Image 1 (cartoon, rainbow, N blue to C red):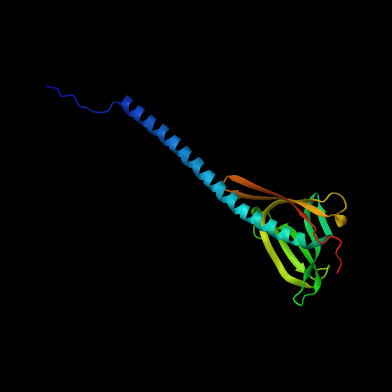
Image 2: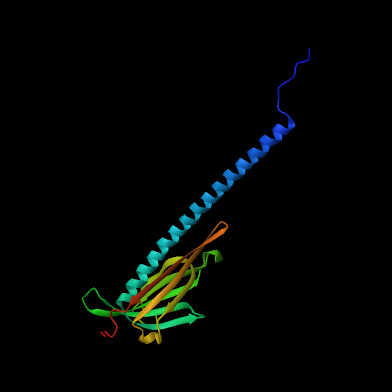
Length: 189
């Protein structure tokens, strides 16, 4: 007597392998998409924290300001912005302060974009530095301002900043737009 062996035929094996490949392909794309979304949201939240810091620092400086002392703008991009303000000294008197907002290429890596830093000084030439250069945020893609005419007579400035960071194969941009009014416009010490 011939016993017939039970087993898989070649066609059944090909069908099982094809279904396995299809299922693994679908699951792989789901995990890849999910990881990309998590990665992008992580980068976006990091940029959001940096954006909040920039907005708070610049708004605080500009709200104390009475004028823009000088601005170095090249092709629409801000390189240096010096803002004059008056602050209360330790002895109760009012003194002048000059805040220089500087945008420059990051020294470490080109992929970091540009760095925004702020220097506080007592003189307009920056010689009497009150606080050392404080690096506020990296990853600046663009930094522009709108002041509606003559910058030395502006009552307010609209800041437009785009933070950008590369993560893996994607680039995440986070724009910030805010307007600050010079509260001390016309105030002289």
